[in-house]
Length: 490
Image 1: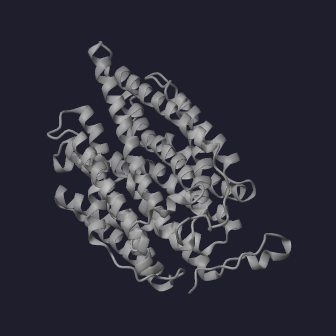
Image 2: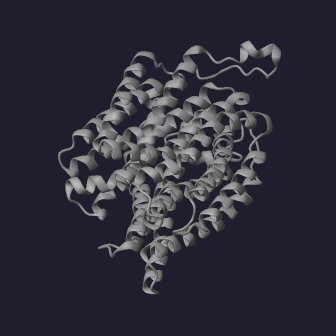
Image 3: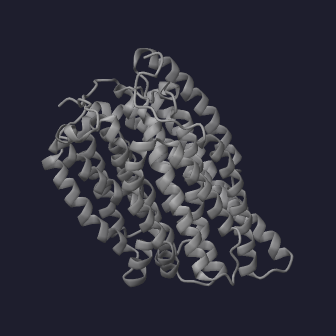
């Protein structure tokens, strides 16, 4: 089935022609549901970690591998998804992704020892890494430019709302039943999605018989794995001494990344690159990606930082902390399709500029939290943040990918998702490191544990607000691009 869809200018007389083929709608809907489930799973273990630590009698530094291992696997697998999607097609990639995720979920639910639980999370992450590039590539391949905004609005719902709702859903399940039930609840949903995909999904984009370059795969694993591990280790090193300095994997990852980039530049001359870097030549790709990255740093920093303030400084339990963040997650979900329709009308800049501004305001609101702050202040800050993120993600994702040729959609989607993981790890590391360092300093000065935690969070959120200023400058440079003929050298 060809990926090309005849573009018809919008208007009352062309309503029927604008409709997507039914098989395309079915595939996109199934991908959206499946992606929501797998991405939701990415942030469920944070709230469940204390229960896991109690059952397996492990330390916090060991338990954090449930999240770090997940992020590392994502960082290693995602760069290869551009090649994988072209090789397997829509159907093959979907079945592989959901098979891995379903298998990993089952293994995690029955894991008798902590080592198997970590291994199960790695299998889960392998499937998750394939799903988001698959969803983006499918949308770009099947939806005409003048309708992409509303569809990508639903994609941004998955990307932003699923991680935000993860702690809330997990907190409720863990409090009521236990940590294993988090996986048992997800398992039947994943299994049904896999079955429906096997029955209904067909290829909606042309396959390309490209060869896999093993050295590129090894370099990608070393580069992105080293960078994500080093960033994750920064936060851990701020809490206690580590046998190896985080600078080692960071410097090593950066060096290997340089080799990876060099090899891709050579291979893309013959269209054999694992991750084709010509996507960065497209108008608007780099700017959109940069704004998205800063926003992801703020979001993941909030996901890790805000619960610490709520539980350690304000004395709330995990379930209450999750519920306070629920209204913002719901608001983001409701706004996704609305922002998508607005994007189709006005383009990215009028949406992203106020969105980035709202994120900065939210960071300042969070920077004023204290042990005695009212809960409505938390809800207000999270609502403002969610409002801002809703106005950022759809414009940045859509405008970044819109200038690519169809042959580069899979590579562009892989690049976007790779940067997401690096930004998420950077946001987590930044918040944990700043919070911990300031907390230790305040404890030495005689502050209580609650006051010290709140003071550390205030510093972290203030720094985040400053970082967002850079994204605001970049957001003013965003512009809409509906023509894919702007990638030079292809």
